[in-house]
Length: 347
Image (cartoon, rainbow, N blue to C red; front, side, top):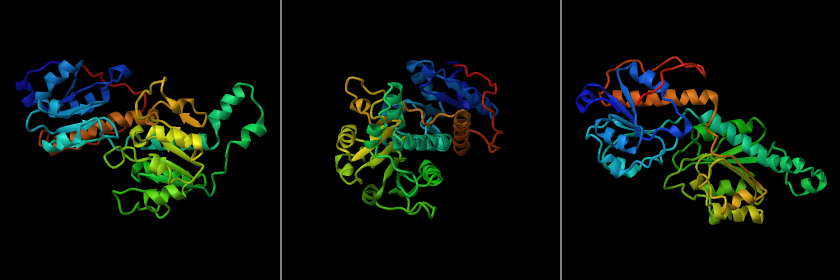
């Protein structure tokens, strides 16, 4: 990290608190976009450097966190805000930020297409028992009558998909599901209408009792933590399919394992887990044949990755503008093609 506190007062400063070095993450787009507005980006190399940079930060970007009271004590009183480098916001302790009057923003739209694509992919793979049949076929098991007898396969058309959380991703999931024949309903305690006549809102109890399949598309918060548990699984239509590409903490995993074993849930497709990665020694879900599991990759697409960086830069500039740290001006930029070159971020 370079630059003095006096320099930082003259130049708006953004600090990446916990860079994704383990993913070889490069912040070239952010450097380019922020630099064009006279803003410098500091990519902290370790926690000591990150903590030392907090007093001069106008914006702090947080990937994994946790970022709570202990870290916020080091921020300047007029800090412009915190940016969660994700759709979710659970890496920042939001009550601590609210108590200090610190604005917190997320990156809400960059992954919507990819996550909704992956949700549909898991839904279809689960419905058609694709992974289970693939495993059987590779093991030279072509006892088709036996395999199909226990599969519970139904056609998509006419089945009812219940969407938990009717935000950007939930609405896209519903629209894409209808394109292959599903009917759709949703539940969401934070809105009064979806704005979509083909996606009516119902209570959670009604959704669980009616739906042939359920897609979890809500954020993880105090109202949704372990929302699907032994009590709510008991309300589900027997033999349903469950897909979760949102957050693992929304599902009580031991309760899900029991529901999968007793037939309440016929098959589950999970991209997220309560603990990531799960402990192989205790991961019951990985040992069940009626699960389709992916390692938290629903967010990824080549196009979305570029938009990810662009949205981070845009949100950061919006917060700096709102707090008066940069002047008015166009925040929009022409889109970058995947794989196009940029300036590599330096600490």
